Length: 440
Ligand code: GLU
Image 1: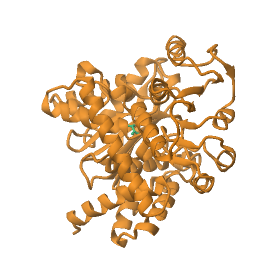
Image 2: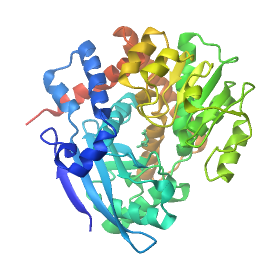
Image 3: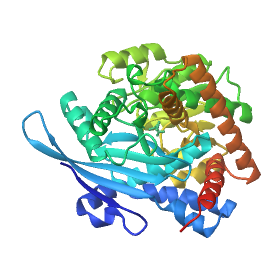
Image 4: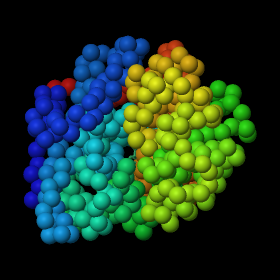
């Protein structure tokens, strides 16, 4: 059985209590600090009550579990798993599960807080959470991944719940893992509970349009930002970092709107083609090449730094966090950044981009399309009635455009950038919810 430890914040922080976590936390010094510094920036403009400031800075619950898993070679390996529920002020907590080597409590705390703000901005009735397991999913067999996912779900069986806490895919996980989660949860609780997780395969109650939704939201955010800043879509070019679910769908959809994709990359390769990359060919190549772009013949090879500094109009970081450093911000040629990934820009780089007149559509707005369609999936599961892809996409596009408009309005009203405008949009709503709920 997994060992479980639940601790409420702010009194304690696992990274201080457990030496093994402290070591991992050092890899990510400051991700939650980056959230706090962005909150402080928004507080200085909005001036919310001190009580609310304290509440929203403190994740509601942090769960850390040890997961013993029998490996294919007959040896036992113990993995660390996490789930942080940042806030349930607006509804049950929602957020994905990440499988990556650098997952630690600090990262999960930051990602959970971002989910709270993302759901508030998307105007969906959810709080925010995030989960993760420190592992390299590329090095695990399918059987090992299944046992690990089922062990994690078993350990979190009392944390997750249709009206309580609803996971979804994130980096390193997808519909296969979500299927294992719904199956394990349903077996433990002896109920059919499709709504306990979103991002499921269609046959298990998934929603049409969910897989492409985050990329679709990136596309809508880009079009809205271009309209507002007067950028001509017809001759526009872009570069996309990351070619997983978000990056590849964003590439396809931006391309379909006439925005030429000149550069793409993943963890194995970067490719540049001044005439535009054939996105369908790249997607097919990656599919046949174990999900990797390495060796794709559609352009010349470039490094990740070259991609981020490419001479394009739009930059879409859709891979990992902390890639837009001060150096990149100072030298970036793009005029518009659409954050498909969570936390791609260091807080120190924000000011530089703002001063240089580069518009940044922040993660908590730009990649909200995924959780928006997760909400639609959950609603369909509750109804037991399913929508067409057109219905999903139409509702999604309207919801993303409304969210964009709202953030733009707040940024203008408070004379700030879109990131702080997005935080203000979320905080206004959250402050009301926290005040209505009251304290005891
Ligand atoms: N992991 C995605 C995100 O970061 C989706 C979350 C969800 O659908 O609950 O937004």
